[in-house]
Length: 632
Image 1 (cartoon, rainbow, N blue to C red):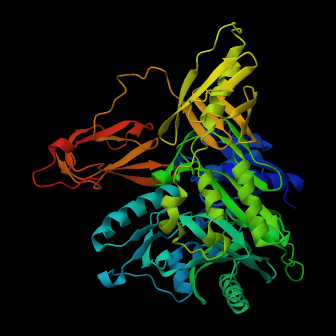
Image 2: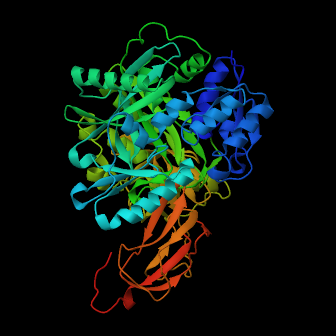
Image 3: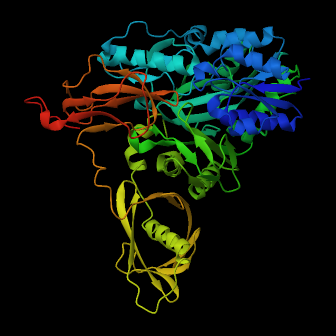
């Protein structure tokens, strides 16, 4: 029997594994980088071991340090979670060679399936070795790992070499393995859906296929919303997917939890890969089948049998991944203090963060997974959308609004989505829609907090004006102090409403006879009113805070990993031309020229750490080369 598990991971999945271990009476040992010293997964474990450094390559990807930590803490088993070394056969062997139990499939199965190139060969599918114009579009894909890292869609042959290089660098950084391959791209252009089958196998020859999951809503080939069962599949296609998944598992002598992924186009299924680990989206399967997959992994590792047939499926489950990112700005990851995270009851919340935690630059930007389970798909979708809409998320910009709108989009509601969903709808789904009364509520809450320092004078009150930035636009809020308290000024943007109640954390307004509640949270100049984020603006703007036209600012904190070959001040550049690449949260982000012109300044250098808003370069549009009038 396993008594102590070292969780060789971080964040949400480490917290989730520790929770199950605690319920089973198993002690847990966390590992942490210096950046994660006070992280939630460390605070929730019985013991912890430091991995010196911050970068994944120095910490969570160091198998030797992880094995050493397990032995030092007296652990008798290791659970790898997902990502990092979870699909690394060498790490699995090192764990076993140290006399520890590996809570995962045999190293031989990992070798056969964790490399997508070898997995395809096993299933009789060959990758492309020579790419021609006729093959386009193609997908460059990391052979190891997942999560969308090391993946690029190439639509122009001239872009292939650059995208191969970027994918290799990204894969090496995220998984410690820079191998990539090329295959035909069968994504949203062809109406394809991403469907997968959860398998669970014991060491006695039993393999369960636990339903299907649809993971078609993706950005950058990384899943955003997942559900089980996959809607709209015929019974025949479902049976075929189950049979193929079981066949793949049996072919490599698989044990434990794994996932076989397919692209489904019409009534045809195309094998993509097998993930030899627990998936991020495993909670939807747990909800539908009433299982704890981590507990089952541990039981299988202890040698127990799977009893009889799989449990019956009940209802429908939908999961949304809450990311610290800005979908409207090319999914740019965001960092900073998470002041508050509160999600209404009735849904499952898996997270690696809590109030007051910092979201840093080194790791994946996922804050949490929110899961709803209900008797029908429509009920599960409605419950999840409502919970996300009412959640208090005070901190960096997130994809919360995108999730709510996606869940309520007709294509998703009717189960007609495919992997091209965001290619078609992203602009509409990210259009700003701030609450017009949010600035007034913020101003009234702020005024209440300050009013105790003064008193009512028997004189007419002049209107007070405060300015807020909301979704990139400035909005004014006008109010007055009256004998009865605070009142909205009729001349303001939200004039004509009645103030029913106003205090620092709650404002109630009567809008055309309907009373609306506004919960207000303020942290310095940042204010959150219900789901709307605002920034309080100074009365007198700093006249020195003006940028030169054509300034190129860092959209996120990160490391400059590459500057375009030969790029120097004085060079002519075209709008959209890539100038440099930033690495943040295990992804590489291309920074392009904002306008056509002449590069008048280049401040970025390879290896440089930059903060969000740092000036990287300046392109002078006034000095554009003669005859070149293109613009961004």
